[in-house]
Length: 331
Figure: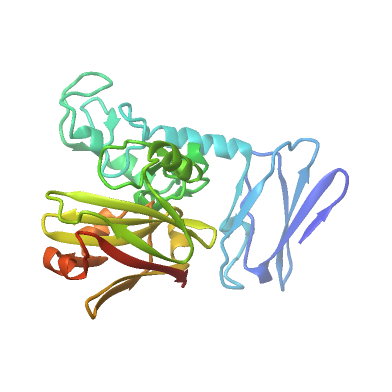
């Protein structure tokens, strides 16, 4: 419960709500615990004249009646001073080479300087003292790392999450604030940028790509008998989104797939269907489009797309051209 007036704000936490407040001696907070035989309350008076920043209270719920006193609380009161202290602690894990955080396993030189495991593989001497690098584990730092939260590496791009180190890398691999790469197949374009700027890059940097409007279109790949590795790309615009249709030829195998210019969550809302028709034959594939965040190479590697060989392509082609019917619908 919260009460407020012009001078102060009072929070009252009851034992029935299975929460309590642990005193924080480093902040301008007065805690007046009062107990009775039936309930435990904790009042926090925060003077608005002395407190210029928002105070965040994180309460971990516990079974009612499990708290014997306010000192057994599982609620952390974080002030600006506490946040600065936490950040100072996190900064101790900064790798002097890549400026990312050194996460367990944490290796150190004989003088105790740490370096992240990725940079360690490229170094022969300590980047701080130039001393020899062994394979010495800093177990103390590893134990501390188990107790603190590390900000996402894409914090400067807008991600506000802080995570335990065990979940940090997994999150960063699919973080929506990770820079997007050019979705065009091949490795020639090195562009990176935000999701909002992907289409502008395609319009300005890849002007040869054709865009068709509508939920049901025909993707025409010409000269499919060309030797070597060849890519065909087309854009489809519908439902307020842009989809990239890709046909890749690798040796004598063809891979057709659709990816959304959007996030993984947005891609899950759609279903695409690819269909080859001709000479009284039909070959179809239906799936959820990939997000350009994850790309298509893994899907092609796992054959998680429409796959057919050169002989099959010739059965459905006409004068060396292959028409693929593409339908996008809401999932």
